Every structure is written in structure tokens, then in C-alpha cells.
Length: 442
Ligand code: AMO
Image (cartoon, rainbow, N blue to C red):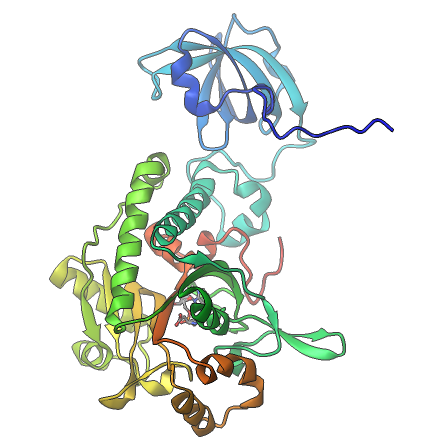
């Protein structure tokens, strides 16, 4: 038998013989081959602008007497391969224009798109935008949002990998939740009941006993019935956990450094997207901190909710802090024990409050974190006091039983962070395919 092999070496023809759009300026005066989708055709007298959508750039091409195909043969959203000359043109934004020579159609739409994709702003409602997500994402601004999301994740990985964190992948199906019963999705599982992970909380704590510093960027599920501009039923959680913790202030320091590093990473590698979306990156060498009880009195106890900040209080607090300090972030610390999960460490000087924090950014909570209980006796006593089922927590409690260093961490909601960064009016705009109480498709 003749055995064939697949080569792992990528030849220059691998990507359809195309050059990377990034390299076009190195080929002034030369012929190049490129592929992409026709984003927009603008007919002028005697020539036409043909905008080609490539992965990160919309490239302006000119159809004219030098072109060897009929403009009528193409339509918007046709997928094409072109050859063109890179003609220097100081009036063009990129310093050159592509003069189209040949064009090969790889695929054509069967009908015109029901929404106009190439407008600067899509003149459609959020619901229509989401109903047509597979194509509305092709809009230049819409897709830039998620290019930035990818950039944020690269920035996080870059920072944490450089600080000796190990990336982990924990199960999303389990027997019990980590954050309390009310927001648990359950499903049948071979004659038993399973649930979807609300967070990787137990696993990230367990794994600090193995790797000391861990992180995960993965989906989590919350069966919250809230129909608000800040709640999703599935979101991406950036979870960080750190062993041998000195105190919980260290966690806020770590997050401040991480955010600052993400912003540097974005400004270096995502200039075009930041500009397109008019995003101004906050400067954060330091972030102000306020205790929960102080925040409440600072806000004149605006809401009747005693153990948490209401969304309105979060918005107002951010506004006031910005006016006073110029910071768009604020850490709120020492949340009441009653409102924090059973694993949160209590303040030894005041058991009514926890060694925990939230981070607010431009009016919204984007992170919760804190120190965890590491003593077996203390954790067991708290579980019993809260009337929780010890048996369900048996494997989690192994870490306390068999020794775990003082540790803590935080969870950052990726969509909320992106939404606040890009100043989007609803968290659904910051999620590729949002899941909310009304939506399971697309
Ligand atoms: P918490 O439940 O506060 O903490 O969640 C952490 C962060 O996740 C985001 N978030 C959400 N984003 C969109 N839709 C939702 N329904 C939603 N719920 C939460 C928020 C929030 O700040 N295990 C802890 C974290 C820890 O202590 O390490 C936890 O999950 O940005």
C-alpha cells in the first residue's frame, strides 16, 4: 500500500497564494494576490471603489480601465481572489490604492443581505442585530469589538504567563454549583441530575494546591432571570487564583497590574480597532479603594439594599470617584459576610464583613474577588452554620483537610469589561452570540 503524508510545512501558497494585507505597503508598485469579501461597491463615473474585507482591514481597491473583468459580475459579499497592483496614492488613508487587474469569484451570495452591513453604524435595533448576528458581525465596527475581545484575552494570557500562572481547563458539567443554588441550570444526566458550572471557583482553589498560580478563561452559566443590560445567562469568566497570599490587597494589586498590562498590549497591537471604535484607554498606575460601608455613606444610603450596591449606586459611585480622583476604576472592599459565598474569608476583626472586593469600571461591577477560607475547621464550621450539605462538598473540602496555603483570587466578567471599555449601551453588544432569558439562537 502506498502511504501518503500530510506536510506540516506551510508553503507560500498555503493561504490561497495571498499575501497578508499587513504587508501590502512593502509591495509598492508590485502585483499582489489577495482574497477577501466584497464589502462595498461604490460606482463613480468611469471607475468604481471596491472595498475588500480582509481579516482586520477593509482595503480600498479601484476598478478602472486597467481591470480585466466586468464589474457587473460581482456583488457585495461575494468571496473573491484578486490580483492587483499596489499603486502609491498619497491621498489614500493607507498611502496606496490597489488597482484591480483580475478577479476570481470563489462564492457568491444567492440574494442581497436583508440588512446593510457596510454602514458605519448599523441602523437597526439590538434585537435585529442579534437575529442577524452571522452577518451583522461582518460590519467593520461590530467585528472590531470582538477583535479587541481577542486582544484582551491575549493580553491577559501574556501577563499571567509571564508571572508564572498556569492556564487550566475545568469541567463545565458537575454535580453541584459553587455560587449558591438560585442561579443553577440543571439538566438530566444519565438518570441523575447535573448542573452547568456557575464558576470554576472550587477547581481554581483546588489547583492552587497543585500549581500555586492558576487562571482560566472560559464560559460559565447563570440561571438569572434578570432581563437587564448587564446580565447574560452564559458569559466568559476570567478566573485568577493565587496561593501563598500575603493579604487580599495583593489581589487588587495583581488585577491593577494585569489591567494596566492589557491596556499597553491593546495600544501596541490594536491601534486600528481602538481608533475605529473611538476607545480611549484609561490610565491606571493606581486605582482608588473604598470600604463598602464608607461607599454606602458616601452615597447617602441611596438604595434600600443594605448588603450590596445597587446598579444605580455603582453608577453614581463611579461618577463621584471620577470627579474627585480622575479614576475610571474603583475597588470597593469588605463586602458584608451575608452577601458573600461560603468560601469567602471573614475579617478576623469584624466577622460581619469579608476580606473581599469588587472592581467597578465606568459605572458597573466587572470583578469580584477576595481571600478564601483555608482552615478546615473554619470552613467546616461555616458550612454547618449556613446549613449547607457537607457531603456534596466532600471533594472540595479535601484541600482544606489535607492542607492548602492561604489563597485568593478574582473573577472578571469578560463581556462586561469589554462593554465598559468600548462604552457599549448593553452587555449583549459585547458578546458574540449572547444567551439571555429570551435568546438561545443564533
Ligand atoms: P461573581 O458571581 O461576582 O463572582 O462574578 C464575577 C464577575 O462575573 C461577571 N458576571 C456576569 N457577567 C454577565 N452576566 C452575568 N449574569 C454575570 N454574573 C457575573 C461580573 C462579576 O463581577 N467566583 C467568584 C469570583 C471570585 O471570587 O474569584 C464569582 O463568580 O463581571
